[in-house]
Length: 555
Image (cartoon, rainbow, N blue to C red; front, top):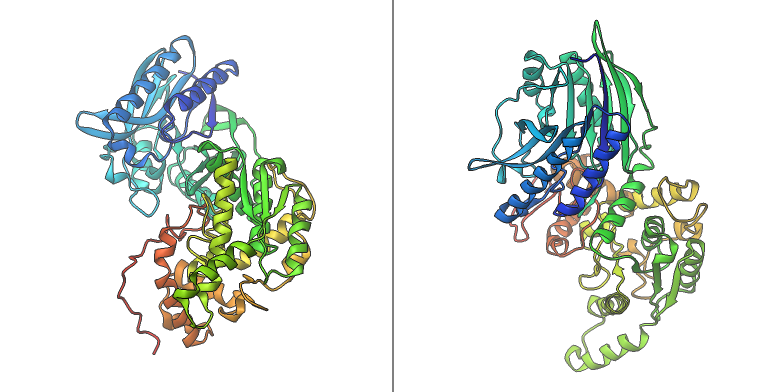
């Protein structure tokens, strides 16, 4: 029995499916825990498989290989005084479990199973796992430790059960993705559990991008009395040591590092940069290409790419046609120079005019409309994909959530790309973030400081420039109006009548609903992008493409 514990939280960036790579990360953490005198090392949820492995869990060989990797890591504790808390998958007879192995001196000394399995728009654990019974505490170096796994702490019954069975301290491994205000939501949850149960809780979260999800780390510990005693870094890997002592009133933190939490204003930028960086690098690419139009969206994506990879790994291409303004040519070059990225001009006049010429016998004398406009966008997409194929760069798309919401994007044109950093960001949020980035240098970013997005781009009216004197507001409501309607419709699932009561024009609301519904097929074919809100298209909002429902609350 001991009255002192040094606990290490390994806030790392695993890759789903990369069993050898994740095992190497875990071994490095175990070695570091030993050299720093830690008594306990905890890894994040399903660390060896990465969170979340989805249908990899249906592959028997993957399950076998993951369990072998876990046994190998357990064996590594033989020459160490560190007790390892290893979250991993584990086969329990016919049941696959989301589990935690407690390993000491080369042996598994305890196994605990996740009780509460999430079944929502992000994770469908009930598809793969069987829930475990209410868990019992684990004795570690004479201390009764509760190990609730992620979702378990969202249900008071699990922590209540652990404390009633004598748990003196809670160690909680998590795979909790970021979205707006998520860091504060987690803290309020843990504060509630600590207040209810009267024992401290250490909350470990992973970090890194995994397809559309971004894990922000920001691990922390709270002890009774609503005391934040440990705070890890946000959006970065971290190795968090804290010293704990047992007194008359239980365990308290004697030494813990408290980092400043990333601000609400900075967090979306960091999430987009981290999600972009990990998606590109984890999929074997090292540099990116994008179309730089002289507009706000492509300028912000270019700045995010420079922050993610460094300017030397970003290639911006302007693709002008006869409707491209001199201002756009000027602003695109200015933005590229400020960012320090490679900049080329590839004119599309010849290919577009050639396509129109070849199509003329079919088009005949029909009036010019979206068909001709979309040829421009699709030609740009073709050119950019050619550069991507030839140079091995991942193409980034640049459409925002407002445009994706109403289908103001050309499928197989400006929607081309492997990843879209702005996919879950409304247009007015893009403007706000551009202004923020010009005034701040985000942490862990590799781009230049200062005004990297020209003010002229922020100030001018947005336009696709597919016809003379075109602006977005020719066919859409002003973006502040559109964004509010979409927020009500998409984020809040409000009835149309309630949206109108906010002061919006009924005909406009009905029109936007129609555009949202008919654009579902486009969104299904769009590039992935970081989830920044609970109702992101794709990972947070899934509607049928063929959909006959009509909201009749507006006449």
